[in-house]
Length: 271
Figure 1: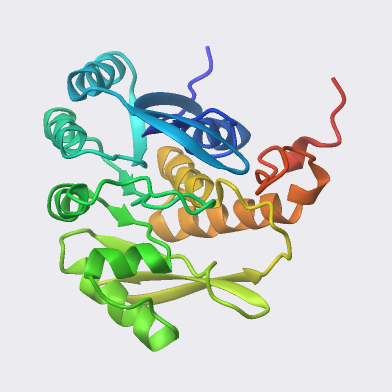
Figure 2: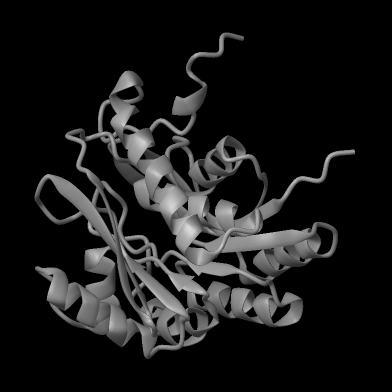
């Protein structure tokens, strides 16, 4: 029998398959880990936008968490879309019960299309209850600004300073994603109490970036589940997502912001 690392995603569902739970499970599969899921919300969405959101009751989120941890040996998990305070409380309690070794928190607030995915009263709960339990927090520039109630950082000194401020909320490390900046490279900043590391990659010119943030955080989780250290996991995830974005235009999905190509490395196979 083959032992396969297990990764868990706690997040919202994307009915078009490009982001959220679906992107996470595709990423896990592409990177060789077994993916399990806890769904926090259902969205009616496609590449052009979010039409509706149906939040899963907190007690059912709890039931999913306990079902997965009660049976599967979860090596690492990510937390994505959590829209309500009650669901944040349910996840916080679940983390206390099951004590997973690796927790990556991707503070999903706004979809690529611009739709708001986090209720305003949930921001403080996210900041005070989930961030302190995270080994790694992965905001993009606008999300970091919202968490800090500051303007969006415009350069490296501000990005590093915001990362250091986010550490004060109790997480072990912060990866601020630089995809919203301009220039020939997309640079992410891993800020820890020991210092800052940068991860740069050529910036691809494409509008097909749906699910990029979800996929990056789940790729990091896949690495952690396989036993990688944080730096190695981040570096591997950056390389995977960069290649998936570069290959995105080889897919023809939808009429808006299409998904990245999660299975780009398998294109030479014919089934």
